Structures are given as C-alpha cells and as structure tokens.
Image 1: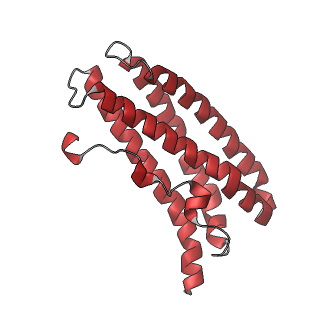
Image 2: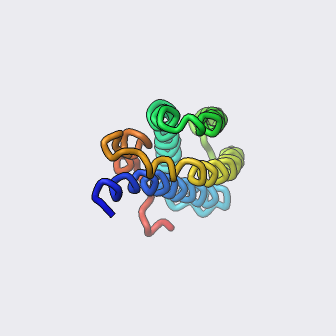
Length: 173
C-alpha cells in the first residue's frame, strides 16, 4: 500500500481513536461520580467538577469540528452521504442539549445532586455509544477514501487538544 493510502486510511482510524478516547474519558467521569454517590470519593469535588467540564468541552469541540469541517468535506466528496451527515449533526445537537444540562448541573455539583448528574451521564453514555458506532459504520470508509491532502485529522475531528484536558490518574481507578 502506498504512503498516500496509509495516510488516507489513518483518517478513518483517527475517528475511531477519537471516539475511543472520548469513551474512556466518559468512563472515568462515570466512575468518579459513582464513587461520590457511594461515598467512596477519592478526589476533591472540585477535581471531579473540572474533569466533567473538560470532558464536556472535548466532546463539544469534537462535534463542532465534525459539523463545521469533516461533514462538509464528506458531503462535497460523497453527496450520497448527505442524509447520514444530516442525521449525525442532529445527534450532535441532542448531545449538545445534554451537555448544556450537565454543565448547568455541574456549576453546583454536590453530594446531594451527584445522582442527578450521574443520571444525565448515563443517558449521554447510551446515546453516545449508539451515535459513535453508527457514525463509524457509516463514514469511516468514506474518510479512508479522502485524499491525504484534504485535511488533518485534528482539523476534522478536533483531536489536537486531547492532551490539554485533565485525565484521572491510573491510581484512582
């Protein structure tokens, strides 16, 4: 396989890697919330708050990059994907509504309301898993066909800042 083909195929893999990173971050947030709910907190509440907000920003950035960059590129190159891309963007708006509710709840997260935040995260987890799987099935092959000169994965998927978001230490798991 040529270097160009390896680079192009990397875009589909990068989307999956981005989704896997977001899944991992969401699992960490969920574990931390469960620890607070079960009175096993190992970190200060403000750190949980910061990690939740960082996850919300990372997910919102990823979806914004897809809507503003990746999907227009795919729609132009693969017009038959337009209905799929429209549905994926609608999912992004639904997720954005959940993130708005979560962010509002997180401004006053306490031991008393952590169960409500956890409930929002449970709903978000279910929606995201379905969304990620469907998106990966529907657009990864198209991403793999893009010319390597089209765009970088960081531009298409908002992956450049993963290292700027706090993650939990492995010893907390």
